[in-house]
Image 1 (cartoon, rainbow, N blue to C red):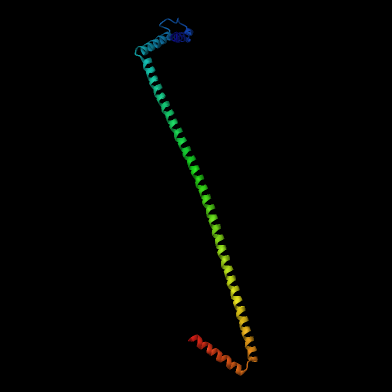
Image 2 (image 1 turned 120 degrees about the vertical axis):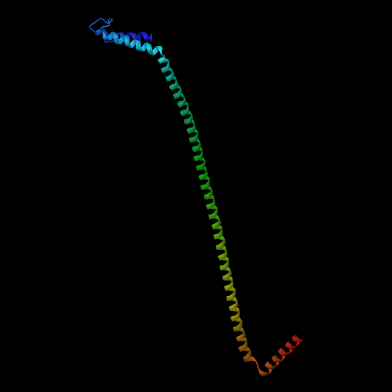
Length: 184
């Protein structure tokens, strides 16, 4: 049916507009039509449509192969993209873990520094309290020493005013005898 449509379309060409009868060898349109039909016949005889069909089939097969390869490349690209996205997510999670660990270490270091500062303050407070106690003890000793000196001086003045020569000689003799008994 397709061939009939082609034949009818060829017959409906301007051949009918010529001034000589169409089926005459004097009509150039008829000669061209016969030449064209002979050319088509030769092409069909030598199998040109089959060769063209085979070439088109081969080209279609090549295109199918290229499409399959393109699909495969697309799938590979998607898997590589998914792999990179997973790696990116892993790197982001690792970065978050590193930041959290650094934050924890910083907090630990701050707590350690605070504890060390507390210990340093306690040591300095203890040292200051020790210095205060030492200064207090020194002041107490100095007051006692001063009080003792004052008491001795007052006692010495009192004794010197109340002491007589005979009494002084008696005290000296008593002290000598006490020393002799303790040394022996």
